[in-house]
Length: 331
Image (cartoon, rainbow, N blue to C red; front, side):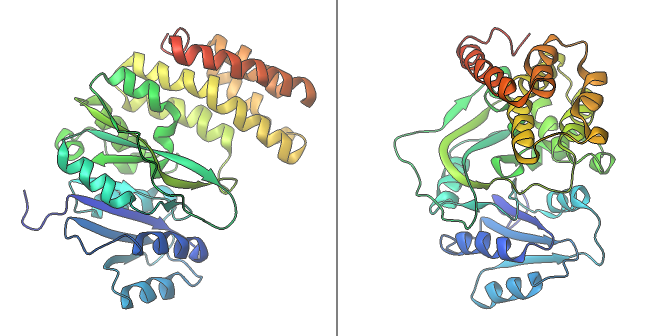
C-alpha cells in the first residue's frame, strides 16, 4: 500500500450546479474532521457559474478539497471516469453534485470499511425535492454482509447506476484490468464499468440499510431515459458483466421495477410522449424477446393514462410478491 494512501476518496463530478454543490459541501463540511484516511476530490467540468468561488470558499474555511478543473467540458461520462482515475483511495465513493450526505454518514462508512474488505458497498438513500435538509442517521439497522453475488445484485439491480449509492474497491478494479473505461463514454453509464468489474470479481459486499444519502429527484436532465435505460443499459450490461444470469437479473429488474414507474411519471409530467421520443420505438427492438416488456412496460406506454395508472398498481403488487419469492427477476 502506498504511504499516506487514503482509505476512502469522496469524489464529486460537477458542472454548473454551484447552488447544489454548495449544499453538498455544506453537508460534508459539518462532519469532516480532517481524517487523513478520507480524501475529498471535486472534478469541475469547466463550469461557467460560481463553482470555482464556492470551492475556494470551503477551502478557505479549512475543508481540504483536491480541486480539478477541466479546460473544457468533456461530458458527464468522461468527468466521472476522471474522478475514478484521479481518486487515490482504496475505496471510491462518487457522489452526484445535487445529492447530500446525512450528518454522521462519513464516520459510519469509514467505520464499516475499516472493519472489513469488500468489492462493493451499496448505501441506501432517501429522496427529496427542493432545498436539501439532510436526515439524521437511522439507528438500529446494521449493514448486511452479502457473500452471494446473486443476492447482492437482486438487492441493488438498477441502483448500480445511481453513482451516489455505490462505493467501489478501486484497488480490486484496477487489479482486474477488465475494461477500458473511456470506451463507455457517451453511454451515460460509465460508472457501470467499475461496478461490473467489481461484480465479476465479487467475493463479498456490504449493503448499508441506513439511509445515508439524500437523493434529489426530478433533476436528471441531459439524457433520454428510454435510450439510457434501454439500448445503452442492455449493451453495457451484456458487454461488461461476465455472468449471464446476473445480467438478466439487472435487465429484468429494470423492466419490472424501474422503467414502469419512470415512464408513468414521465407521462404524468408531460401528459404524453412526443412521437420522436416514444418509448416503444426505442425499447421494443431491444426487449421484444422478453415477456416482461410486454407485461410490465407496453401497457404503461400504450394504455390511456388512467388505465396505465391502474395497471401500475397491479405491477407494484406483483413486484412485492416477486421481491419475497424471487420467482421472476432471476430467470
